[in-house]
Length: 285
Image (tube, rainbow, N blue to C red; front, side, top):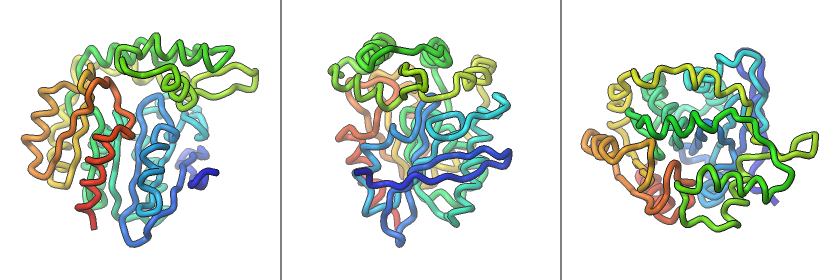
């Protein structure tokens, strides 16, 4: 039996968007968990189960993922639009203060929210993401996003994930890959196992001039004034050790944690990540 409720809200352009709502203390700011580019609410199931009860945990699925509707215009698959969608949810739920945990693309949303709603974020987790992104990691994402592959069995799906992402998770067992497949894929109406996102999310992502990234350090400096946990995967190819160290140097309240023998991106159910998030939340009132 799940310990969350499936709920929905509407975007300004009329999309029905989904979120998981885990019950918790009404006396504390809720924890908002923001997933990565091709991910969905299932990514945070381990962490949310750990936090639920003490903390209300809300895990929205961005347009085009999971049980959220697909956009008619693929150009709306961008972090600015995701923050606009999320703002409507926060307003609908009358959430004025929250903790934001962002993995990869979700961390980019954190940076945007730092500029757009700085007073609402009380603490932040940046999971394997920062103001500067490494070209190697971006190229890896460009190689697989939007490929539209499908598989006859969960075993085939798991093996395909291992083939693509094996270098990032060298210690994962077959059971880990099967669990990963069930997080990122779903059974289609045709009986095939498919990735649980709109393949068109790849279009705006591939059109970005990644060799001329905008300067996001001013946005980070807004968040740097708040309690922060910066998580880095030890073998990440997207989030460099140099950027990680620079973030910690610019954020006096930040704690850094490195997840050993893991690449992009940690699941945040690793013992090191869970302990660091618990320490961050202990600072939140």
